[in-house]
Amino acid sequence: MSQEIVIGDKVSVRKAKDVPLSFKGTVEKLYANAAMLTIDSFSPDDASLVEDMKNKTVVNYKHIKKGGKAVIPPAPEEKRPGARH
Image (tube, rainbow, N blue to C red; front, side):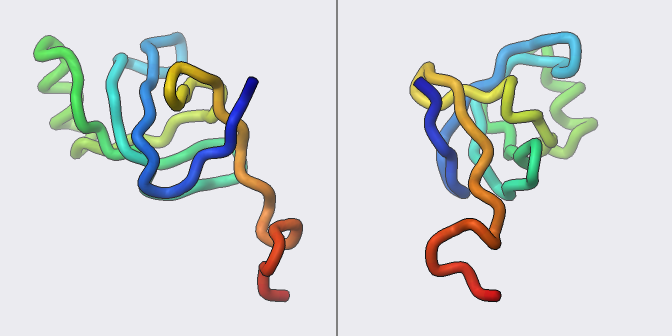
């Protein structure tokens, strides 16, 4: 079962074709199809790559897991309860 993520959530990302490394991070910003994450913990072998990325990266929601479960994108602003119009 998928769950929605919010800014500040701790998540994990697995290395894949579109993702150069596996890491644990924190959600900094949410976009329509991806989230900007701060890279908090990673393999020492990836240290130079993480440094090159300034400890941040944008990852598609399909590669992000929260508590071992897949995540879903947040509802668009205009569909959120209480959103300003």
